[in-house]
Image (cartoon, rainbow, N blue to C red):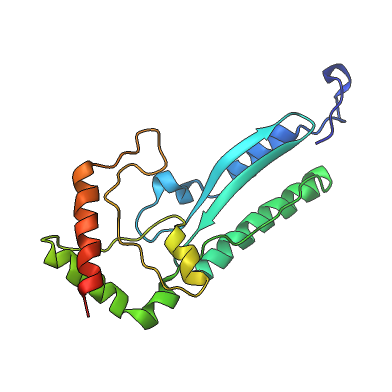
Length: 184
């Protein structure tokens, strides 16, 4: 931004907080986590802080489809380019890939999924396969060379102030893990 006393701001001030909000407003509203489901990708502002002189916002960009993921990153870049043209190169964009879809690395090792399903069924639980719409330790391990599909923990409301884990779920998951090491 470009800060100055508000009494002298006419045609001079460039309010960094307003630019950060403008950037967020340019991103597709229909592609926010609260409006997407299953395999639909999203833009998620996780944090914003600033003053009229300087602001910073952080986003998570997710998509299960690698082409759509690349397109989302290009949308973000185009929005920043537009705002830099409008306000005079006041925005710096840093994109770091954090978690990618691990499916491509798990598929050659589908026996891991089959073994997990067998272990769940041995414990009286019919496995339900659903997409994980965020990053996980398993995804990180998979991209480091250790294929590690997510098995569930039985927790609910992840990363919210109402997150919880029923004791019965933990007990059942321990039972599943014991069965999993028995699968041949």
